[in-house]
Amino acid sequence: MQGLIRRFEKRMSLEPIFYGLSTGMVMSVMLGTVFFALIQNSIDNGFRSGIYISMGVIVSDTMLILITRSGAAYIPEGGTTENYVRIAGGIFLLLYGLNNFRSRKKAAFPETNGGRFWHFAGMGFLLNGLNPGNFIGWTAISTHITQVAGYSLTESVFFYSGALSAIFGMETLIALGASKLKRFITDRFLTIIDRIVGVIFIGFALYLILPFFTK
Image (cartoon, rainbow, N blue to C red):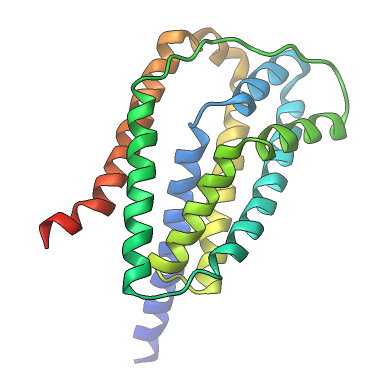
C-alpha cells in the first residue's frame, strides 16, 4: 500500500513538471525583442553574453510569476469562476492564434554594444519585463493552474520550475547555435514559426471552449 502511495505521489509531482516544461518550450518560440537581442549579442559578443541575457529574462519571469500568482490567489474558486476563466482564456488564445496568421515579421536585428554581466543581464530583464504580452501570458497561466487545474502550492512550484528551466534551456541552445542559426532567420522563417505557434494557440483555445458546446 505504501509503495502504491509513493508511486502515486511521484506521478503527481512529475505531471506539473512535464506541463511546465511544455509551457516553457512554447513560450520560448514566441519571437520578440528578446529573441533577436539574444541572437545578435551571441553572434557579436559570444555565447556568454547570450547566457547573461537569459539570466536576466529568468529573473524577470520569476518576478512576473510572483506578481501574477499573488493576483490569481484573490480570484474566488468555484464552477462559475472556472467557466469564466476557461471562456476568457479560450477567447484570448483564439484571438492571439488568429493574429499570428495575420502578422508579418521582419528579420531585423538590433544593434548591440559590448559590455559585462550587468549590461547583458539588464538588457534581458528589461526587454522581457517591459513586454506587456509576458505579463498577460503569465497571468493567464497562473489563473489557469490555480483555478482550473487546481494545483497546490507544491505542484505550482514544480510547474514554474519546469517552465523556467525550459525557457532558460531553449534560450541557451539558441545562443549556442546563433552563429549557425542566423542565416536561417528570414521573413519566411518567421512566418512559418508564427503559423506553427498560431495553430498551437488555437488548439488550446478549442480545448477550453469546445466543452461548453458539447454539453
